[in-house]
Length: 364
Image (cartoon, rainbow, N blue to C red; front, side):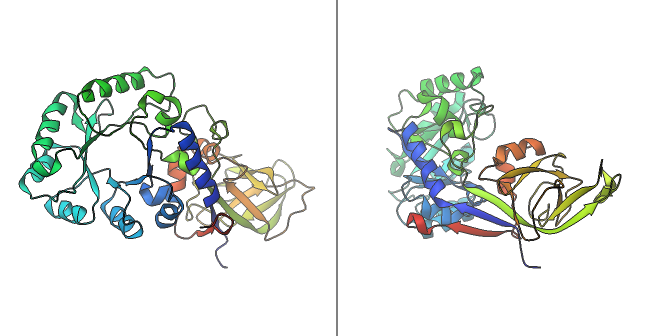
């Protein structure tokens, strides 16, 4: 059987979500975060669709090089920086801007003769305690970088939030204040706001905002839906019914027989499973959409298939479309049922799934 699992990527929705970024941060430049293959949506196509962004940010070296081949002019930021002199030289030859998060990287920069067009981002740790120069050492790092002749006036500054998705968490305001205090005397471009910061913490907007998950139509904030921010889902994951079986009362289905029919029940077998990226550990009774109506998954998700409980009055047939998440069924809801976050579900869709892009109506 040919592949029946399809991820439809709505590039019009992607552009719309970028416009929501502009609406919320009208005085900032936009660094569109398209790491991890654009959160599973397709790096190259997403980059071309987001032509109105002011720059791009990725995490891995190879993605940065690929992006530069697509766009010769926009700033491209490598969020994890470089590991050694070889990587740095290649980055600079492609005019890619590395993030400097450790003194070993400053040691390397001080040894090399850098092009006069080199730009770097100094990352300060303001509370995330992951990557970044400790805030007590920030001034030393800033002075050393600016002492490099070719970097004078080309050192920008960033940090990253730990809890901006929770409006009630006091740590975010503390991070903003610390960042503002540390950089007060630094006459340079600054960036602090991720998607959640962009939507809820206007004091964090500064020169550049860094939207990631919101570009793909997913709410970055706890207890708030994407709709509440006017965001539109970009990925809709779909498959089709490949069989409809009549299960008798007290019969079970699937591995482990974890579900038993309470009455005679029609069951739709859908051609998608954890081999396609749909989570095996999803809770029973997770919804899917068939003809815009919700039905529930029953039994255990297997590698290639899952089962959906229908009702006796259904009029569905083999070949009918089933929506797993996306338009009409937020991926955030499915992620909650899987005990994870939407980011993970979007990123783990596998190569078995066929990707279809909706470009024509939007001139892409």
